[in-house]
Image 1 (spheres, one colour):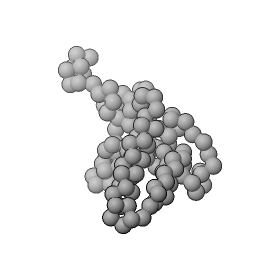
Image 2: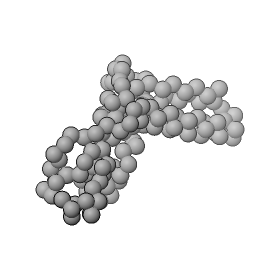
Image 3: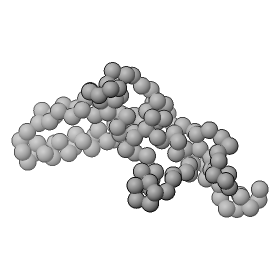
Image 4: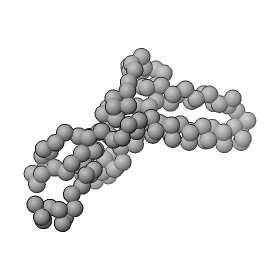
Length: 126
């Protein structure tokens, strides 16, 4: 048997008993900080971050959980063993922050928001 349990912050750990909403997962996972308008020429933001569309954290978690179940099914076909999977929505959200983690790990570049990115033509017209 393959058993998957999805919880907000995992079954154990310091936040295991906490509940969370989609917005909490998006904010704590870092996705909200990636969304919003571009910084000014000095790197400062005039507007706060913008949350992605509704239920985004749960869509990510569902997709990654399905991949884990398919991986467990593949393993079961080879090893004839089931698995128990503890899946955290927060963990899935935190690991799905697009390019900011690779930017920092490999290039030591600070990630900037890219949503609502102004085009060069728009900047010239301003």
